[in-house]
Length: 93
Image (cartoon, rainbow, N blue to C red; front, side, top):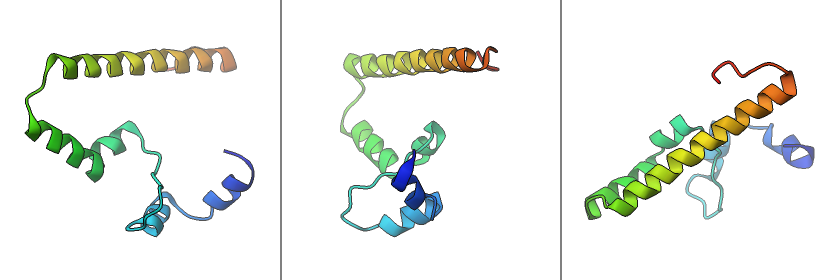
């Protein structure tokens, strides 16, 4: 992030931005890490409602499989970019 947007966003912490927009009708969502997203109350509520609604199907399994495959492809790209930029393999590659 660069320019005016960066100048504004660094004026508050992540938690301060969340508190500022909590309860508002603004379309604002924080960027979360994978671990943070798994603990996110909104996401957990949606997944819980879905789990109560029906039992998992083959389609659910396919969606999960595709999501995991996409995450693995992305991790490979990140490692390749790190190696290209630094000349050294990524530590977890």
